[in-house]
Amino acid sequence: MKILIADDDAIPRRLLQATLVKAGHEVVSARDGAEAWQVLQRADAPRLVIIDWLMPGVDGIEVCRRVRQQPAAPYTYLILLT
Image 1: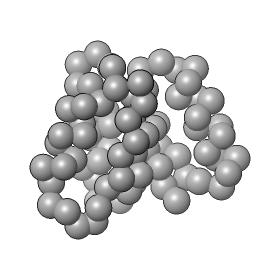
Image 2: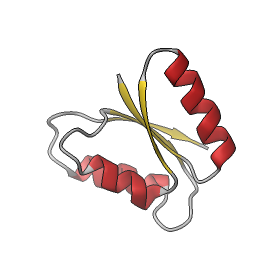
Image 3: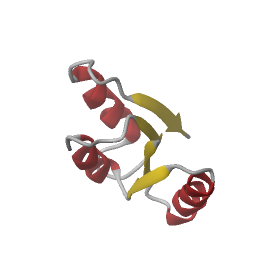
Image 4: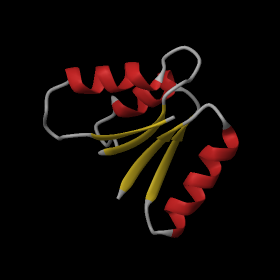
């Protein structure tokens, strides 16, 4: 499964990425909400997003709002980390 991880803190982002890759997933990383939103605009965007709540600029809540305003197909699952 292709998963997007968005976190402005490099250490938790890399730890989560290593864990998911070891479990056999394809991982795309973003350093902030703006970068995550750009990834989600692509035709091959991941259907699962694990995103940090607090990030500079565009935060995780705003990315969630934007995703939910998009058409429902294909559905994107969101996990918000705090």
